[in-house]
Length: 519
Image 1: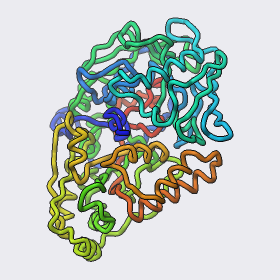
Image 2: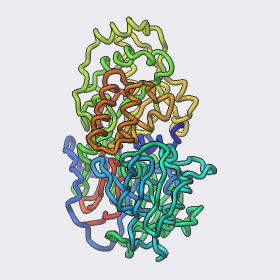
Image 3: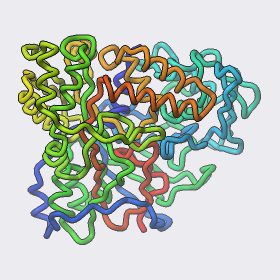
Image 4: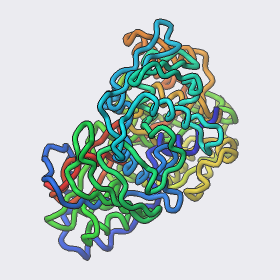
């Protein structure tokens, strides 16, 4: 089963646009070059009331209030506060939200899902298990343009409502930790009967509800005081949509916004430009892995010797310094940094002599290599071009295929490319590797890896699952097809008064705004 474009975008931590110049920074006041970003620890408590204006990377006319369709960071950030999730993630572990538990059966081929009592929808009606059953059916509806990847795991049509707070959920393969799967796919609840999501029909249970929405421009949300957990702080939450990173930065610099997510590294290097502003980082735990996925279905990366040569050829420190401008660190070729069971083994040291020998032994020197890239993340294209130069040193001929945002994930082009740029934050390993395995161009066909995957997903024993994920990463380190050269900081620009910004599930590029406000 192929990944949908939306799942790929969410996995990759989508960031549209290109790194902009910083001329406006100099025009707005004295900057502080080299000042370290402030970690957004969220220790301050916002004041009640007021208006918070935020700006995120937008998706233009394709933006949607459907929590399962939106593809841009602004969609994820906006819909996260309109609709509550069944489970969220914290440090790679599931945290109950609208669901209070997901207990696997003895054979792990079904699970009992218990949902929270006493929750109200924005229109005042009660939230029940029937709403969750409708949500699952909606996710699996064949007429949807992007049916949920959850359909790989769960028999969405076979879900049974036992009582108002209980559902029995059959699975298509054993799931030892179903709550983790639901959390990792960010399954939100929609109201029973909902088939469209307009300003009037996008009714959720979240801390904010829709007041106004214009795709590609902005959304205005107002506080829902009846929220089951904790109502938001601000009376009005505004999310502005922009596609260019410099424009996002300028919105804060010129006073049009209070907070801009996912700003260019150049902005941090130049400085905050005003004593009232600060550059923030989501912290080391929320760094995003930057690298490549190698296509093992075609030469030369169908040969494990060439895959290893690629890794040995990399000057990782030079890439971090040039692309991240130092705001990050080197990677160890494994995605999933910051999540449970991630293996923090040392990165490979650069060894050009060994890499050349491997290329020669595989007779791969004359094979043309196409690496596909687009500026979904700031630095994708620059890293692709730098890596192409580094691979020349070991006899590999690389052609960067730099394409536009809209065409980046074209399935036929992915299949034809030898590699493509990719990035992942703290996505849980079960979902990360299942998603890679679901796409032939991203998959690694390996018996040991498949066995570890089956145990990691299906075992009821946490220790057995942990051992399986270690074994899987052993395979990936030895002969895998992911090349993670760096771990990037996620940076934002904010007025100093902005507080309560939270990162949930490793998605630092579109943080949770439900408890945000002005201190």
